[in-house]
Length: 186
Image (cartoon, rainbow, N blue to C red; front, side, top):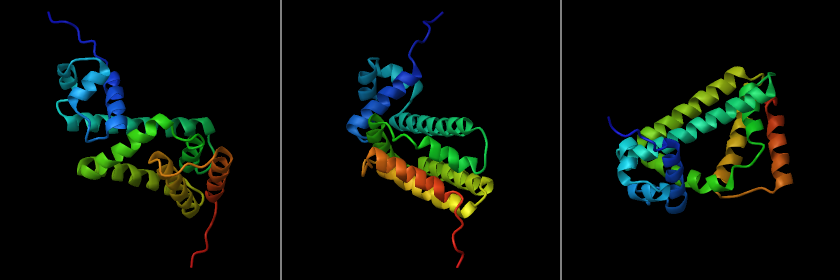
């Protein structure tokens, strides 16, 4: 009987994120991840047969974490109208972790270079937008709020701009105001 496998896949993905943050997607190698995790390259290859498979696993984990964060934010609100967008606004009350910003920036490069990953992001966005429209009392206001919220997140996650604490809190509150707005339909 062989030895029991004890390599933690989450630790390997953590190491992969650390390498992506430090060296970018182009600097991600199975060797670099193994070294970061303190394991052998063979152990990384056991679960992730290629660099591409590892990148996909890191991106998929980020998608799952994002979905879980939004689901928890909605649960925290315990009902009400326009829950899909209000949950996203609630989740964005805190800025992204500084340590994850370089990971997000570098993973965005992977999304642009990989059609399958890009399709996954497109499908996720389409589902989110459809849900926001379907569940909102003012679908147009909710979509405008979503676009504003995603703009703030884009600036922050890609490390392009960061609003100070009070200014950021005000922007998030004002995005919440947009949820029930009814724009003129000219």
